[in-house]
Image (cartoon, rainbow, N blue to C red; front, side, top):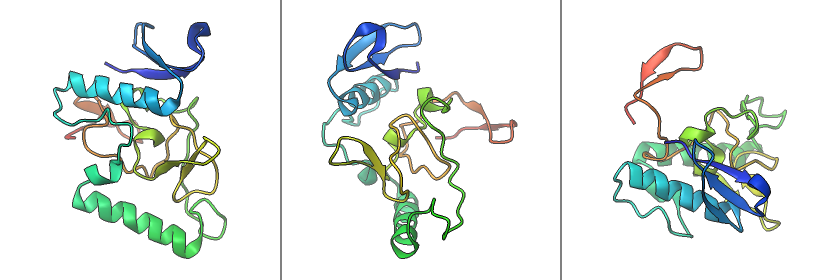
Length: 167
């Protein structure tokens, strides 16, 4: 079941975790706390044994060896050449804001990517981009650990065709 995170939903101050029927499952002071609840709800549904409700959750540690190498490679490229969205690198990131991200409800979002971090001012940053990102936004280079995307067995691919999701 998809759970959305909405700020100041139905007059409630903070970040609410909302079920597909509009039911508020919890309201939190920070987006991070709401994401923790959202992950816990997904984990409970999939009978996951992971403890994903920890406040200090390290997504990098949940990546496979190949995913860690992908993560590390992207960070190394950004360290050597500058942010990947800069004109000098010429890499198309394909970032979508939270408002445009139709896949956030299944878990495809920056908040589930190992490259995001919380900035000192409370905003979110990405290790490979120059600008502030949104928790529910996404880009085409997301590095998301197994179990964080809760999709149906058949999904549409980028071009509108279908493929089987084995994750």
